[in-house]
Length: 376
Ligand SMILES: CC(=O)SCCNC(=O)CCNC(=O)[C@H](O)C(C)(C)COP(=O)(O)OP(=O)(O)OC[C@H]1O[C@@H](n2cnc3c(N)ncnc32)[C@H](O)[C@@H]1OP(=O)(O)O
Ligand SMILES: O=C([O-])CC(=O)C(=O)O
Image (cartoon, rainbow, N blue to C red; front, side, top):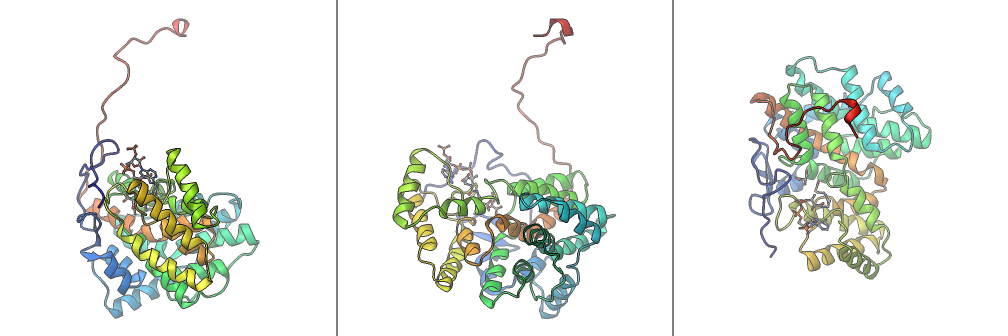
């Protein structure tokens, strides 16, 4: 068993920075709950829209509420022309997370949150149209087509895959999207959520909070790790090759993306779930390399460093098996985590004090300003 993680030191580790009723992370070493429900239970039994409703509105919807919520979101997928114009001006080699950041920010210019009473509506709107934003830009900049973003797909994940590929996804792929979006939906005071809460604590608007959070999620130490993990494993031609390369990386003390966690000490409960789906998808596409390579990476990291896969590692192969381009991996995380971010913004607003910690000063002692002629 792994040694318990010491939650202290730099990075505010182990310090309680507020209260939340939304989730618990690592309370039993490896557990994750959303509003009291185990994430495994949710991933096994729910669609993403049910979990979004739970996180944003506080309870699991009954059938009528779920149907109404899905119908509402379906009706909010279209994009205003001014936003389409902006998306068309973003170059094909831009990073899709920058597209998400700009898309969210532009939406905030066009459909402002005028009052906090609108927070639920603007959140639902973002939830419905974020897949439209990323896919419209991607298809326009890469395939030179102006897609119609109004689909009648039943789910957010299905809508995303449909726009991306120009045809409805099969049942397996739609199911994996539900699971993936559920796994990524909420995670207490992680870096991007904390960004959103800091922004919310100044009484800023919802779009600003979410735009800032997207920027924090983009980095490879956070959400960007799923893309970085893909860039790692796609280089390996066999488990033996993966083993040799991973050993070299560990000797050179390189950081391996998709492993380790700031809070969990033994495992990330999301890993076993997405790993299972990655295995199913590997069988579905007849993969004999990427999945075994991923498993070997996991074995090497545990054997050598007692580091376990976090949520991102097996997401890489799972998304790849569904034909999703690597650079769109982290935007999918955005489509999901938006629920957690927005719920935290609402929670912060409901009991707010501006977040303003202190710093230990390490600079110069007090000194007079020299005249400009006396400066080096
Ligand atoms: C959905 C998510 O956002 S999950 C996180 C996604 N991010 C990644 O996968 C990036 C790779 N992982 C990491 O960088 C880290 O594990 C983090 C950022 C997730 C957590 O950071 P920390 O809490 O500071 O890590 P932690 O304190 O456990 O590190 C302990 C030691 O293990 C090492 N370590 C941690 N993760 C890794 C890794 N992935 N590869 C190699 N070494 C690692 C650290 O360098 C550190 O070594 P040191 O003591 O010699 O400096
Ligand atoms: O909690 C964290 O630090 C990172 C993480 O796993 C997440 O945000 O899902």
